[in-house]
Image 1 (cartoon, rainbow, N blue to C red):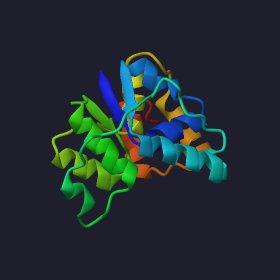
Image 2 (cartoon, rainbow, N blue to C red; image 1 turned 30 degrees about the horizontal axis):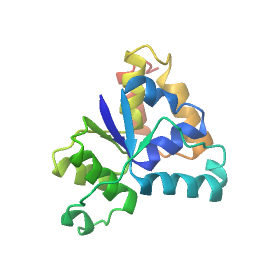
Image 3 (cartoon, rainbow, N blue to C red; image 1 turned 90 degrees about the vertical axis):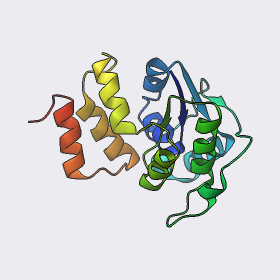
Image 4 (cartoon, rainbow, N blue to C red; image 1 turned 90 degrees about the horizontal axis):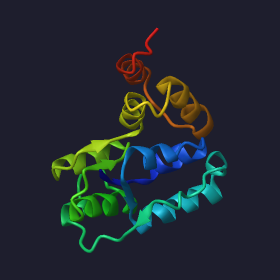
Length: 164
């Protein structure tokens, strides 16, 4: 499976030392240069991301064309999000790994399959790569400051078979 990742998924998993979940779940993980630059900027400038190390197995590629509509809209996308969507379209990725709602909406409007940290962790548990979705979610939320609404978190845990 070929996937393109945005910064959020990579940096949040890297902070807790679990980025390798991606390399074990997906055959090829690709990210555009803007995502790598943002990752490195966050890791060097924000205390909560200081332990994040760029995974060397992530292939860095640049899209050759970014659709014009990704530069407009009610909520403007960041450069990394635009490049990730464009790259996913260009290389016919099986999925785009992204958490931010505006980027998810734009990707879906272009016909891309999207999944975020919750979906990745559910898939990892179903594949036997992790034993607990809740434990990893708690670590991401505590250590990386990742925000997830309580109702959504409860639904993710229910889907993982970990609801109280």
